[in-house]
Length: 439
Ligand SMILES: Cc1cc2nc3c(=O)[nH]c(=O)nc-3n(C[C@H](O)[C@H](O)[C@H](O)COP(=O)(O)OP(=O)(O)OC[C@H]3O[C@@H](n4cnc5c(N)ncnc54)[C@H](O)[C@@H]3O)c2cc1C
Image 1 (cartoon, rainbow, N blue to C red):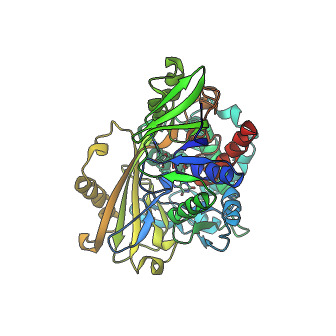
Image 2 (cartoon, rainbow, N blue to C red):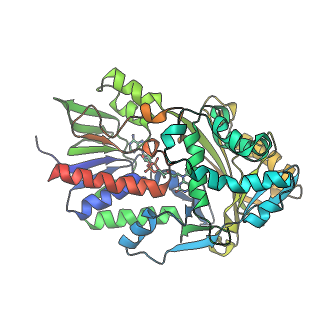
Image 3 (tube, rainbow, N blue to C red):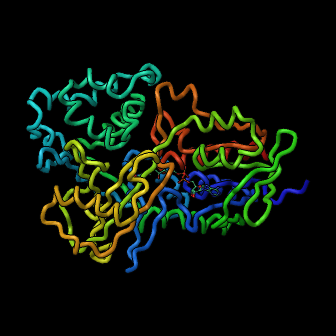
């Protein structure tokens, strides 16, 4: 059979684009199929009516992320990453608390002095865990509460975990929290402050630059191209069916969530393999992006630790990247992770805005609806893999039932949590693997 491509890749998120870039550079003929009309996947951007461009879901990097700067350098775009100090805070008991440095922590009076010290020491305690598998059977609470004490857990960590994992908060294993604490502890400078990084013009611009270079190297990226099903023979994939016909390739790489991959393989793969893919649960995300004519506060990332607040936090992007880069507008994200069964998932855009504003105005009583110049709500059904107890024992690997079919998906990024830095790492590693197979 004649192959049109060396590699067909499903998904133009950061995993698929990175793999495509490296394969193209190595002289391979690559096709990327992307269902959406823009590249970047979960990190893609959109334009408000006035041309202000911003991510659909807030994004930044940490200053200890290594794969992003490496990629940006390879693209010849060094200098386009900007780093800025993070301004983080907490809303608790009707008050805003700054929580960017150890000194801020010492001033956090809802905890007793001893509890504040205990909270500060947590970073060192978590570093003592050398083998994450030793805590994989525990929930976050079972592991963390004995380390920091009941009150610290209740006031500081429980609301964050519940805002992040909603109804599945007790199902997530301790490794997620451990890794976050270890990584965040190591991003701090000598004064305990933290720098975050961003790509000038947004993550969507970086994805577009990658597409440009893939195309310049002879690779193809097709938008609005939905991979629907596979055609196989003798344990090998022959082709992918799209709305525009069949795509034949020597190797196939799937980068969306397991559930979507299971749908694509549905008619062809063994039932037990499809069940393994579907065993991994995900939370969705509904993200309200507000374009305001003024600022809400001076905090970039405001964790809300009052019970009943149904969002990850209030993220005012323009307290990170200057409003000057957004036509003087102020961008605020209110994002909610939720199960599809949550009634909020079915809210219309107007209902979701009303729902969000009632919480926002409780914290910022001066805020008026008239401050909103425009708003958008983005929904992603597979936004966060739920890493349950003993996740490593059931998460599917990169192999598929097909000798030339491979998966590199964000739910495989473990013990780290998903993120563009790791998508780039995995995309690169997958490209190397495919190059060996093609040689
Ligand atoms: C709310 C939120 C906030 C986040 N914040 C950050 C952050 O601050 N920093 C950070 O680094 N990361 C962040 N992330 C995580 C980051 O966005 C992801 O880890 C990363 O973008 C995953 O890239 P990916 O290529 O693996 O997957 P995806 O981005 O999901 O890409 C998969 C692609 O496959 C396409 N696709 C799906 N089905 C098909 C099909 N049948 N045919 C063709 N194409 C298909 C999709 O449209 C998508 O473009 C955040 C994620 C969320 C949800």
